[in-house]
Length: 541
Image (spheres, one colour):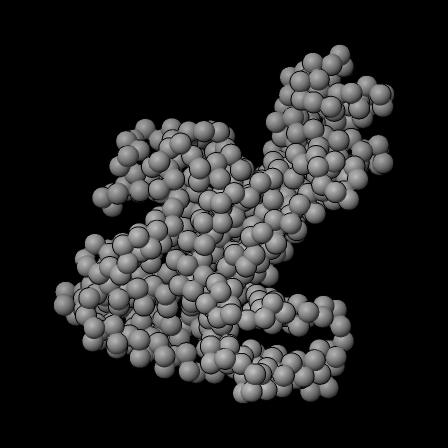
């Protein structure tokens, strides 16, 4: 295991033990990869060793989750909801053209990071958000670092990105660079590359790139959405581990017309849920799931924007007669101009915070419970936003698998650094060390991620039912979900896991192609380990 060791110099580069990198490693896999990097630092060039040091530093940092999507998809609003503070500007300004990393800090501050490495500290705007205008030459800015004393950020760094599909080419390129799209496209066009420029890019990406992505879509999934997801997963996991490190949300769910979705009736949320399921089928296996969410409602309810004065105004609106209220809620224009005791300016403020759907939800809650408090009403709105389900999925897909995600991303960076060195002997030395690591029993999760990505990317052709089984076993952290038997008794789960372990072992030996057999052996081992875990955790032993 990692222990503090004395640092030493090699070729002018300080070789640092993993324990000195700062931060807490996500788990045993990250620890093993950190140890591997530390051992290899004395066996590679000084520049590659410096890259390994950055990989180790990143292993000790929280999981890096990028919130990405097309322009005007509501990414920044969702970022604010996840953090629980309206800190990311949602109006168009200089900072919305930049990548912004929100991470934990003991003092709230914003740092402008320039392309030449300089940093400049800025104060937050009076409303607590990042200033819309930075007062610097934006063409010289690499990205922004926002440090917040926020508990959510202790376990996850949230990265807000400029929108894809923007007319601003520089903004798009910043997002593509973060997601790996630019490098992915360059590799596809030019083939294999080596050289110092590639090494510098790889070293920088080892620090700044995202390890997981929360992808924001609206009603239509476009071709560049799929391309961006493909590039991201290829860049972060080297073998396109979409279901492991990517989920998507259908934002602005309240804007979906129920009549546009067959079977939804007049239920907006049901329509959004059904549309999200269709989009999940379109985007899989690039993402683990697509969940509906109303980012604006979530932001207002979670960030403190919804006040007792807003609750009072809604209470007053709830007293409007049904016919008038239904007419008012037809459109924003009618809502703000209709003759009503609630001043038009206050109604406009409610629209900006809740939109028509949120206003309707709030009025229905007040009418059902006239004595409801402002705090309870805020919680009702938060429930209506769908944010809880998104957070739960983030916890299941990302947090529970942070160790594997970070270790896989780190190994991809290590491989790229060795490849970029241009030294065949160094490349082979790193390759051999990785193979030794992957042969260890505790590294089975990485083998499972590899098998999953081979199947998900189509590199290994499997029958559809078996592909779905591999994706299910490899993409979930919960045992019931892995087995496709949520909520079933543990004895039943154990029996099924052992049965499937035997089936996959037989398939690997007698019915599979060589490529399929490689995957099948990994899946067999996964089922056997699940069976062992159930028996170990069982009260009966």
